[in-house]
Length: 231
Image 1 (cartoon, rainbow, N blue to C red):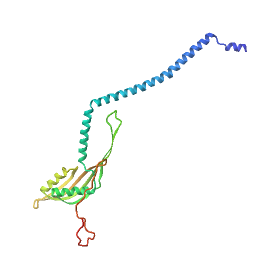
Image 2: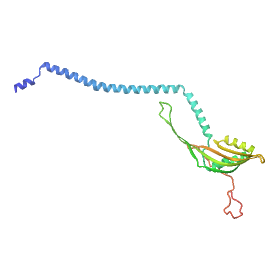
Image 3: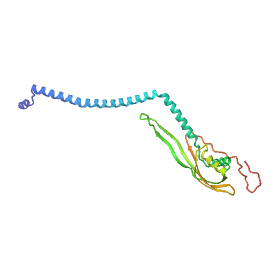
Image 4: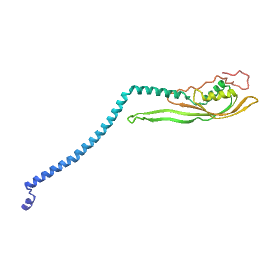
């Protein structure tokens, strides 16, 4: 037992050595965990600082050019509204029929027959991301572009035929002549042919569409009677 106690007894020199080793170990652990954590915090703060400095420069540049941006925005909004105004707000069959009623009335061209096709979707405006790298907002729109194609057979004189082409190409709402055939009778001066015409519309958003009304007589309740047609 005395021998064991002697073996377990630590000299003062060894005690001091153990204290030094423990102190070095504590310092190493403190450095490893403490400094590492501090280093991560420094990196995070440095990244945030860089981001804030970039945002600050961007905001400062915007503030210096505030009036220019306001003027440009108003100009673009005006152009945007003018562009939308070139397109009808609806693409119903009554709208297509109204177009050809006006065409006949203005140009004198007789639309002998017409065939209406289903309206097709051309473009969905959807969501547009901001081009500003520091921007957070996106532009979202539920506007949708449509196309209605109508095939017609027509008859007119030469002057009316030219007016017909000009009228379609310069119509207030966007319209195009996709295909056109014409045959001229020199003896009668009559032009006959067919045309494929497309009407375009942009629908949705705050665009209001009013269905056209037709001031025509609607007939009678009994087709075998001689009663005057009702309005």
